[in-house]
Length: 401
Image (cartoon, rainbow, N blue to C red):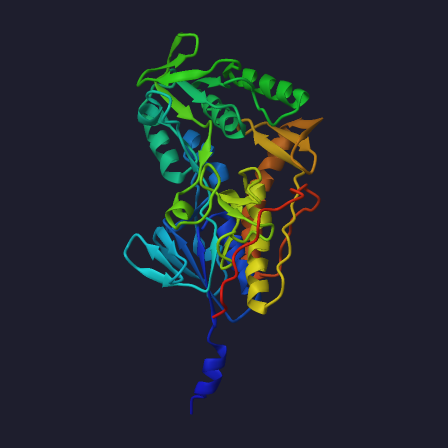
């Protein structure tokens, strides 16, 4: 005879919808499995996880950046391949593009970020290629494949993404110009910047440090001084945005749409919505958009949800940075050492050994996600990064189920 009482006792009682299947979403979903009475659903528009930190490799050499979610998600976690269009906080549902609605008790908001091009620069939206998402990278690769290797390629934006993209393309024999808009590698120290500039020069990248692009054409870029430079393909890496889901859901956001939270990563509008990664703006003072931020915030966002389920007070999140590693093609890299607040110090490492280290970091990120699928308690984040002394007001109190 079946013991229906026992079956009822094992049915998950708390429904958590994780919106976004990137680095933050997957790590947060896996960490929620610390409790066996939590029903976890991940909503993601693609059927595969995308290694965003590898997209410049996809563009330059066709690297396969897609990873099967079956290897990354822990047992019992459901994947819904769809796009979240609106969070209805009153009804506690997530409305999907397909028309389906998912009921929730808590949402982990992990929609990530996206590449953008400014509408204020004539021709940028029409002719420039962002690279921050899988589809954007595929579109750029298709455009490059149609070009002669000697055709001029312009990369606009000399942050870490721009430097890595320019390096990767140049190593493949492309004729690359990197337009910095003021400074090469603004997050680097002066010694680290000089080392990176030497590596770019060795690869044949033309670095235009002070120049600013004011117009993008189908076959050229125009600079602030009126100069016109041929460009068969223009890659735009100077800026990130975030999906508009929080805004569409009537939740408070910062100027670019990141969800404003308190120091427990909880929305200042609704304690049932907790954010992690690039789309979060804790106390309206967000951290750098990067994988290191995503992986540190993810388990802590999950811990906030778990604390609320248990009826305990969530902890304020912690974080710190140790440095940033920039690949310069496949054979060299720069490791910039930083303070815990992400500001650079005059210490860096460079060369082939650092390139090997960077590759190990990229592989290690996937390893950590797979480990969290097997062992939900396995987490790691740094401590000591400074936070604002006066956080924004906490969320309104919401009744318990």
